[in-house]
Length: 33
Length: 140
Image 1: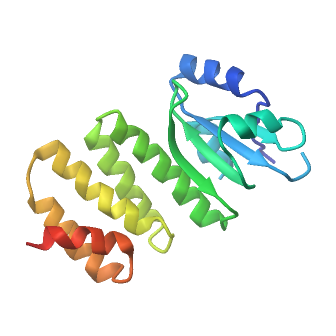
Image 2: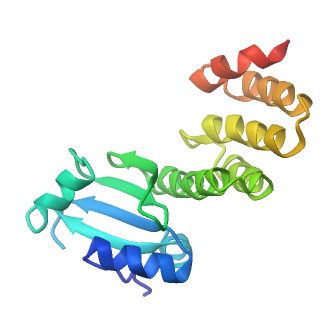
C-alpha cells in the first residue's frame, strides 16, 4: 500500500519545495505518529 | 488522497508534543490544521479541523488553485477552481471555488460576462452559500 513520505522539518521542506517548484503541505497533528 | 499529496506537495508533518514552537511560528491553535505554503513560505490556504476525505481533497485542490491565482496564472487557476466544482460538487468549498473560477476568468479576459454567469450558477446550485451572496452584486 502506498504511503506519504512525510518530512518532519519545515525548513527542510521549504528548501525541497523551492528546488522542486512545489508547495509545502504542512500538517499539524496531535495524533500518534 | 495519497496521490494528490505526493504528486503536488512537499509534505511535512509536525506533532504538537515534538515541535510546539513550529505551532507558534505558524499560529496553529488547533489540530488537525493543514497549511499550504508557497515555495517562499507564504501561506496560501489553511484547513482547520477534521474533514471527510472528499472535502479534504477538495480543500487541497482549492489550495493549488489559489496558488495559481496568486501567481497570476489565471487560466490555470480557473481550470483548477473548476476541477474542484466538477469533481467535488457537494464539498463545502465548492461555492468558494465557483466564485474564484469566475474571478479568474474575469482577470484573464477582462470580460464581465463570466462574473454574471458565476453569480447565476451560484444562485442555482448553492443558494444558501455566503459566496452566492458575495457574487449577487455581479447580477447587474
